[in-house]
Image (tube, rainbow, N blue to C red; front, side, top):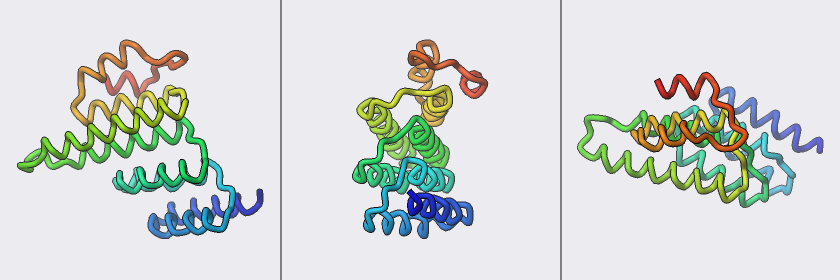
Length: 166
């Protein structure tokens, strides 16, 4: 569909320019106009939100994706796990409320994992490595070790997974 390709190109351009708000508005406009956007269009904007460290934005975009009836992929969840890891890194380790903030990020990670399961999406080596990194950043070392020892069926541990474990 030509319109979806045009919108995806425009979304990519806005994200590369660092215009996340503009990309989100354009995505909203496309959905309202009934343009059938695919998973790549949503992933471009989710990825930009993740890279910018805007976890809530990435989660809202995932919800918009679901509301539009667009099925996520392992790539979608790789991006969301990366957003969670980045949010955990941003928690000020010296802040008096750091434990609460980290607990909130851990809860978000659990919800993203549950979303992956409920969506029927199977992990790839990349998404699984991103999950391991999110466990590390949220200080869930036991969960990280257990997941590493029992990777999902079909997932081969890659360099990123091994380097996370070191």
